[in-house]
Length: 245
Image 1 (cartoon, rainbow, N blue to C red):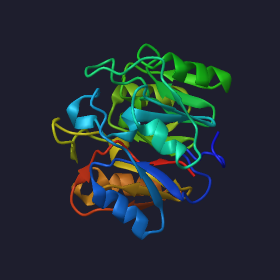
Image 2: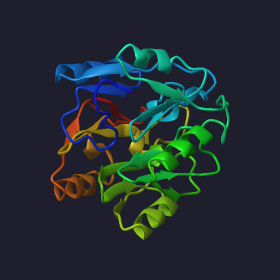
Image 3: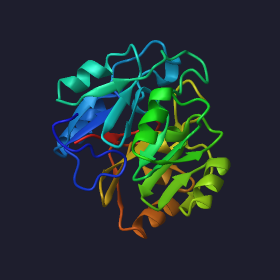
Image 4: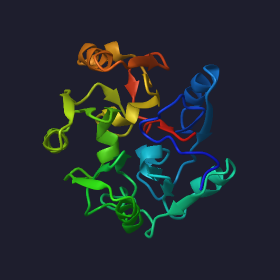
């Protein structure tokens, strides 16, 4: 276990330690500038090239457990901060669906993910805390959803949006694109942001570079959440920002 309660996707206080991609040092620097320490991922060569650094591909938090990909170096990095991690049962592969073993989004008593692609260790952790599994066809569930609070989210994936709404969430449906992910046509909304406090969501670029940026800001504002833009330029899918402590 970690030395203190893990914050996860919906921190109930200001985050002091955040897991971010090590591919873009300027991102970690921007967070440190506002007083947040970072654990930066290393490239995991078993994953597809464009997402080898992505936190949402390498790890997930379910309850008080951090689950990381088997065979990667993240386990040891977390241990240096007194955070214990559990490894997946399987090694990841360089192609879908073998690359999305940890790609689920968990909060409160819900987990969004594809039960056919999530690792058994992830599924067992969900069962242990009696979470309700919101099953979706999208294997990159954590990538495609930006969780705003316990009852609202943002996504461009219509199938995921439909499922979230079936479980009572308010969903802002945005258009796909306008999020850069080198190596792919575009990235996803969940990969370019993350909650750093109950009232703050950080983004990797400028929301006005997205066609639905104004709608995103309004959706956040209606829920008492402000957008913090960490970097200049267009939004960049870096695998999200995951609050730890």
